[in-house]
Image (cartoon, rainbow, N blue to C red; front, side):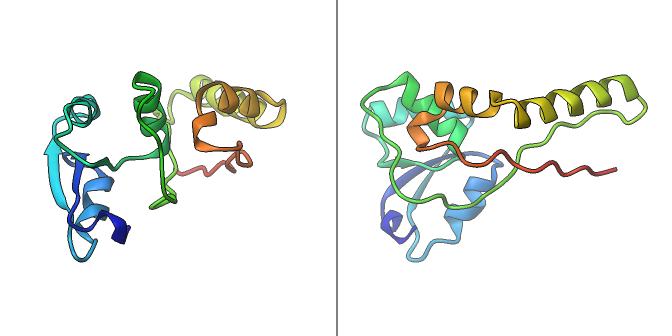
Length: 132
C-alpha cells in the first residue's frame, strides 16, 4: 500500500476502501467520488493514478477498459453477504441451497473463470457464514 503514498487514488464515498486508504502513511491524495463509474472516467481522463476498491468492482472496471490492469496484492479480504428477512423461510432455504450447489458442483469455478479471471486463478469457494 505504501506504493500509493503521494499518488492520486480514487475511492467511492462511504466505502471501506476509503477507510483503508486513509490509513496509508505517508498518505495518498484521495479523490472521493459518488460511484465507481466516476473513478473509471477519472482514470480515463488521467485525473487519478489508481482506483481502490474490491476485486469484483476492479474486474468490472477492467472489463470496461482494456487499457486498465489490476496490480498489487489485495488490501483486505472482505466477504459479501445477502440479507434476507428470516421470516421468509422459503427464500432463505432457496438462497442457501443455491449457494451450496454453486460451491459444490463446479459452478463457482466456471463463473469465476468467466467473470473474474483477470484476478488470477479461482480461489477455493468461500465457506458459508450464517448470522441471525
